[in-house]
Image (cartoon, rainbow, N blue to C red; front, side, top):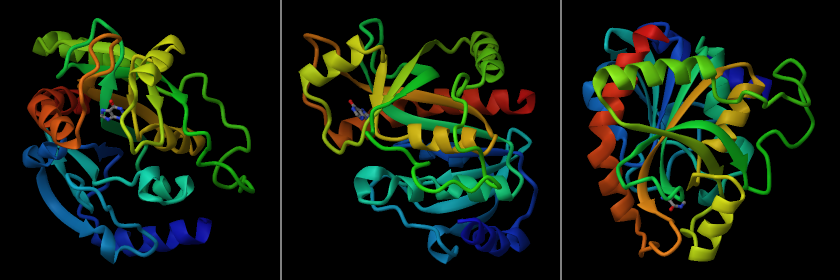
Length: 270
Ligand code: HPA
């Protein structure tokens, strides 16, 4: 693992135009963020040793170095999901590479189904905590203590400091935000009404098919994490409607500009 991380990072390092401390993972339909980025270098996943390539429509596959609101960022445009058939460990591999390249803080975005009855489609939810419902974990297997601890702490997976900055920034920009618990599931089916109900009873406000393995990996290696969901469909008792990937993408795209404004305004304060 350490060797693979080193080989990927060694390939990328000479191509880096800047030294970003902040990494950003773009979720479904949120690729519009890239339009606001002053791109300085784009590297296709295909050319990076040991990187997987994304198989999902609406997800691209490149690392982008650039500036957003004057701040150096390293963007993963396109992420890997467990439902694509990869090992969970492998979906989170790029996060190890980001750390090897100097990233300290990870911003994660996703599209999610809202189960909290006060949520509406298009809402932005700041993730306060998560529940890992994947039934597996990206850290399974022999541990390398040089990478991270065997039993990593998850008592504050999502940085309170960054949530505070997000709340102050959203108030200043007059962007309405929700806060809640994200349930990470394998997918690829959307939930049945009974599943949405169960997940809400279990303590989650939104459900999606990513982010949890990425956060676990990032915390394991000591990165600070800030994550946010765009609520793209509702899994509220009595209101569950047919969900489709197209609707999820459309709702995420509609909310995208608000999310981009929030994140880019936060960057200089992070
Ligand atoms: N469930 C799971 N994943 C999702 C959903 C959902 O309702 N919406 C967007 N991603």
